[in-house]
Length: 373
Image (tube, rainbow, N blue to C red):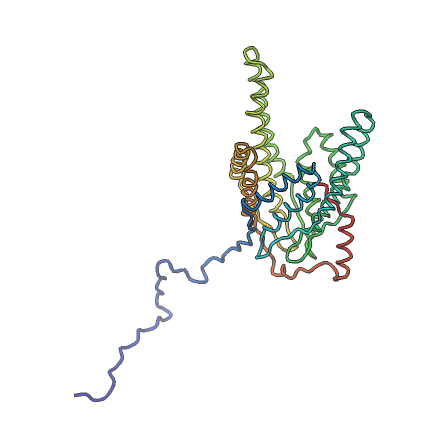
């Protein structure tokens, strides 16, 4: 007969005491304290350009540059740079290029005057040729500084301009005096000189109030150049031996041309691409922006294979696949670069007050010229 009382509940399982043995976690379950912390992946650069868009820009630039005998090249360069910078995205923001073509056109005129003086008047008056070379060498540091200042000033990200702190003395030391060491050492100092010029270019850039800084050793540069140089030396020995063996059966000039275009130039091209990939990683991995750092992971074999396919496509298409090859290179390059921002990166400010920034912007635009560097 029902007594009206609820049925008794089953007894609760006893809790483990101090002497009890804890049961192991279930298969695949990792205690929170034992789980390794996730490594920060960084922010990847993304390139959004596509072949169809760039082909229209490229074909119009080519046609107008030819029709105007090169006058339109300054406007073509602005369109090209604006397209590439505008399609690079980082952390949800895209870059911008704000240069005006007349400033580039003035730089092109200066280069054209030097070329005409060297090529035309130098053929009749040798002293003009030597004088042009001397003036060009002496002006090289100024040209480098002006070009870097111009391009940095006209590159914008998140509304902030990049800057380049000019120094003619530092540019003269890097591009002239240290290059003399390359001549004195018969080229042995060239990898170190390449490192010095890159260090000069990077360390004097800033983004708003943040400074770029790079500390590279020459070891990576020497190993890259020596590997490429060794490959070229082997090819040169092969060509010399082939000429010595077949000189009596084949014309030496024909054999030399065939081996140069069929063997030497391809290996030279591969060597250049190998150096590019190695130096790309070495430079970016050693570069910081205040407390932020960059990470590059370009694989030499993938980059070389990509460039060989691009090269073959451009040749077989008589140049019309150049935009396609350029897009492939830009997309792969962007995918190989990451940015690790510091917590205070988004707080980076513009230099100075709004009034001072406007004055400095006008001054930089007035003295800044681009010479195609």
